Length: 144
Image (tube, rainbow, N blue to C red; front, top):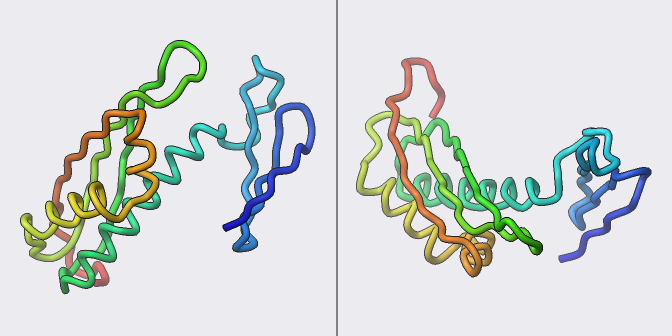
């Protein structure tokens, strides 16, 4: 895997992934930024959310669960002193579908957390990571 980050100006950087996709990162105004993009630490948290959401949806679909939506809300705390690593991360899944099995959703969340999500497992070396989930019933007409 490769990536490239190029300084644009002030506290703005352009990140380019090996897959060919790009993202703008920027700092807050008090650090010389113009708030034009996400902060690098936010990128880490977003990456973890994307990684675990991908796992949960894939596991549920492979289990033939009629999942129609998955939202992951993350809340993190950081150390007070540098390096300001994540010390706690709470991950809340909102999984929507028709007649989803609570047991299978719980299993998907657990498998992602303990076996498949490399981002979660890596961040878990410095942060206490907790998970919970809620299941919502899909409205008629929602595609599955």
